[in-house]
Image 1: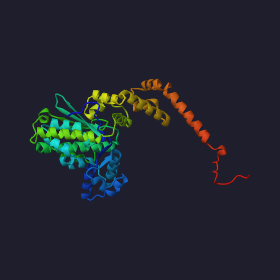
Image 2: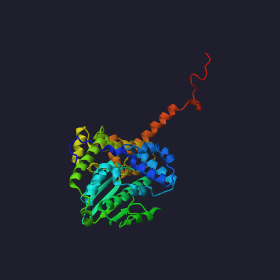
Image 3: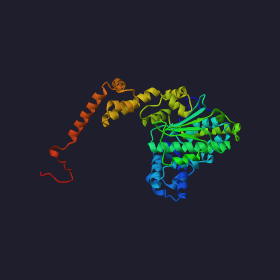
Image 4: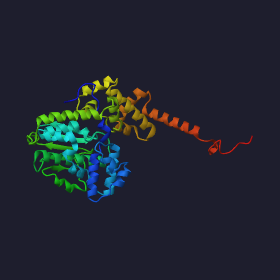
Length: 377
């Protein structure tokens, strides 16, 4: 049952993921003879913490833990390995919903809608064309490149495992295009029976699956429409529970704050939540805000920070903030600030130099504190 109306809260699973997925990987590495305690401690985590059924960890901790584990084990295939270890039982109601899906197309639609329950760091977009069903996975926010690819390998391997299991077949004949070049563990991709793989198909971390229409719409043997309806409602409740206490304004600001290169549109953010752009607009309006206003305010604040604190050229700042060129950036900045970016940067430098001069001790000596000595009377 889709969410509607301004009473809906954002799925602010946006800052955390279930710890059990990292625990599964750590436990598997231990079974292979690897030591995982130190890498986890370096990421501010522990095995005991991860093993708690309800534990969640933020994405920064997850990224650091994955990098530490990769460095400690010397393995480049941790994402692929985790995806191959995942099973539908770990996904609770969402896993049961996949099992009850009538077709692969329906299962991917569920995954697109409820992926935040498993990971808020990635989104899945579904599109139908004459070629078949297209499923594209990519990060929802900036991530270290190696971590982003690792996560997409989890998505790929897990999708393959789930598809083979729910269809009770031995292969999944689809075409997969990934943005990254063939990794050192490329031979492991041969474990994905029936998959035609293409490496190096893009510059940003992205995974694309093309599923033939006949396969996408083929009835699945464990389909259960009544169970799927109840499980979909349960997944909706979990999305709402994860978002309690968070406003739509806070969610939008959080989603925009870390973005580089291009701010997502209101429609793109709404799609991440499985709601319409109009529903998101009404939810923000109920809180007295508008998406365009939030995006403009945040983009201008970032522009001020980059002009004041970096030596980036105006063209580089314009690109980072998503403007088409430096001229458009300058016009937008002047409308708000009444100064050009160059004038603002010069004024900021002058103010910083003035403050530094005021703080600099006369004669190049540091003043003595009152308790260090006593002046003669």
